[in-house]
Length: 123
Image (cartoon, rainbow, N blue to C red; front, side):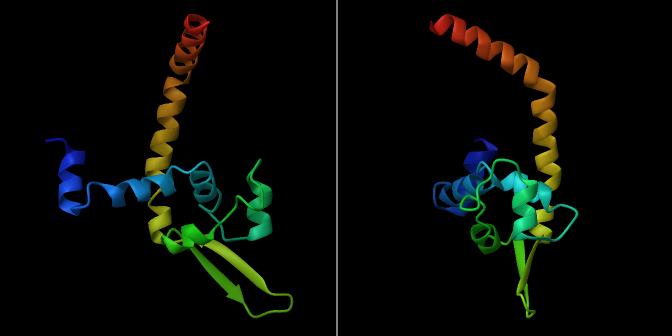
């Protein structure tokens, strides 16, 4: 029995919970948001500016807050100020994210060559 199958049996729901969590973490923007918040608390507009290509609509922090990865702190000031920061759970994503990025860097040449070869065959 694989480790994944064992984990699914422990959860008792066929892996639905694990898939839902991985869907959030592997979302197109989540790891970029986590990496951007790694060393600093940021306001929404500052976070938006630091992530190239993300739209304001796409930059939804509510789900990351709901999942306990990001905290939201509102300050009773005029004008109102809201800052976002990683929680300890969110910070715990940094090492595996760096490991995945390192893997991508180590294998990029092979992957690009494989893609080019595939495209040549597919024509």
